[in-house]
Length: 535
Figure 1: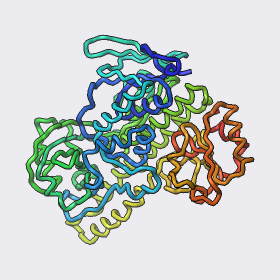
Figure 2: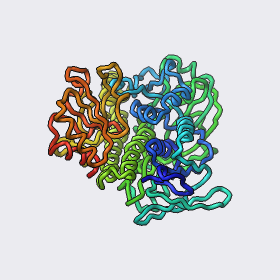
Figure 3: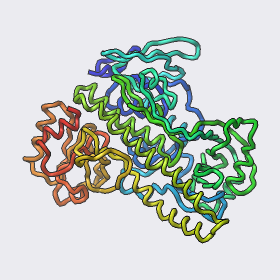
Figure 4: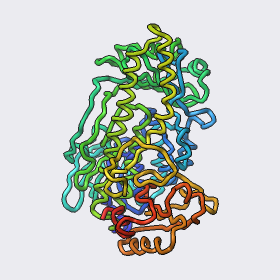
């Protein structure tokens, strides 16, 4: 029984979450909405007004829909949909003659239940905080910092302190570190990291530039821009709108030892744009470009998620989206374990699913961006051979669609799904409507005109798409026997869902990934449901 069900907390909760950014509060919502008590410890009283993590994918918006704040997020967006939230890649400078559309998320829209969105992370955090305040099972402690984490066989003790020196001890059945790339939780749990350091110092500028809108008026519908420059050997000059007015952000490499005082950031911006313009800086900060991944996401009763588990440069908008998927994956599994529904393998599957996906994202997408851009810039130069450069540039442009559609995180190799023999989980995949074990369930219309995402249950859902009752009943019996929440959704064999999913039976997990799809469950219904729940 969870503490939320048993009444009250008084410094105790089922789960202590250290770090109240998007991942921490996303996890709190996934747990709290399932009746699991949690305490979120966040050192910042208000979200920090630094515009990062802005590209929210269709999949991330599915999370927000499940947590009951999709419309709040969309209402908070400073860039309306009709203005445009697309991207663009240019060569040399933003105003050069060589450019093409980039990061066209609309290409994969049919495979998700929601549109994507663009919102600064601080606004996303504000929406998550407001929603969490509406959930009785969630307690938030703002202005407190974690100073120690200790665990024993029964739970985890988290020591916290506020700015005035007051100290408290919190106690939970589990603890999760969502406390960023320099995670104290990760360190104190003894979870090591593997790093790929590019030895690059990066600057983040937030600035006001009234003239930029007119300078970039030719690029209608574009909200972010990356510039490939031969001098930077594959690293990006990356611009983005914070709003539709005059506020912008800029990421770019700078020489080691750069400070706020010894570098001409204004000239750097003008060079990247390709024209002079006036600007005023609101923020100048620095960060180290590196890719890091924890060697395990779990140590007994302590877990890590988001940047505490993995970090990378802001290439392709993967960061906050990957972290929120961690939260969704871990949250339902912790809830199932705390309610006694899960077998011992379910919590282990968090690491088994999420870590290979990030490793693939880092290797096959982020690192590949850097490597392919470096190779291109070294091999092709319009000043040296214009015809060669333009042919190579057109080829790059044609590859954009494959790049977006090829990013399809999946858990085919997970121990709790029935993927193909020898399959491995990763980020390279193929979007499809067909229901495949380990893959995200694509939306589909049901016979009554509603969408399948409106009908899925809080726990597991069995889509019975024209399957005979003799095949459905064993799943219902197995769910009762193991106290596993299961909703059965019956649809006719001639319906659109049956044709699209290409299977009469589809077992969907609480995070809307497919655990198994087919006609005859291997080993029987009980074996399929038991494995999906970690037994």
